[in-house]
Image 1 (cartoon, rainbow, N blue to C red):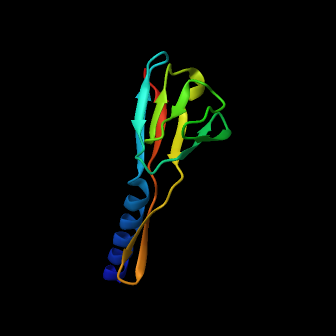
Image 2: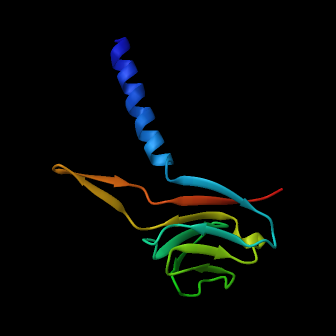
Amino acid sequence: MFWKIFYLLIVVFYLSSGVEGSLGFASAAVGETFEFDFGEEAKDLRINRNSAEEILYAGKQGKYPNVKLSDKGTLTISPVTENDFGMYSATYKIEKRVDDSIMGVAPPAIVLVKKE
């Protein structure tokens, strides 16, 4: 019985660490410039802030003109405002073939919080 519980705990730990591996936290003060590199694969971002969701496309203007995503996948928020705090996540999939299996990794995501 001990080994079954031990094995289950290892599996749960492995799965939870893999899911959270792509989530980061960042802070910025209002008025600062904030940048984050999501990688060249990022052609759009899903933004969740203030209970609203937005898709921001690279090279296009979104709902807020101070938030931009470059063609190289760099998010720039200049200047940071009270509306900019929330979750920013890339929408692409990272897949790798291993033998006859495909392994998927969650794309990067950050939670931007107000620097105190």
